Length: 156
Image (cartoon, rainbow, N blue to C red; front, side, top):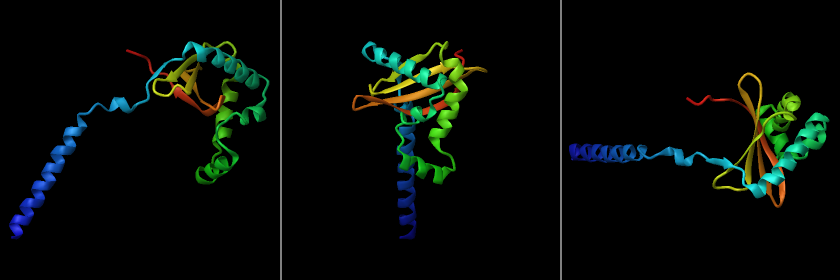
């Protein structure tokens, strides 16, 4: 009886292992958000946003810019307690670093393929880095969701 139980358990484990391995061959790239250039109807509004964002950064209107983020004060204080860092302050410090480059930079504007209310601005920086500014459109208004500095990957 013991041998039968052990054999049954091993058979179940082997079946589950074969089943799990068969799903690993699945292409996981479909779960990665795909981007496309911003649509023309959105591009006009995005150009106005670009001008406003550039103007606020050049004029050092950081308190005004702080209100443009999608993170509420309560969420910011909670995140600061958990991580020790205020995300909006971190984002604004990155915008301060890139403020002088914004006016003359060639901005890349994209939107997500499956979510036409999410946009990304990319501003080329120094030393092969880019500033990525993520926005979302919600109830007719655009909100900043994140600002990150990323390495530029050269295509082969």
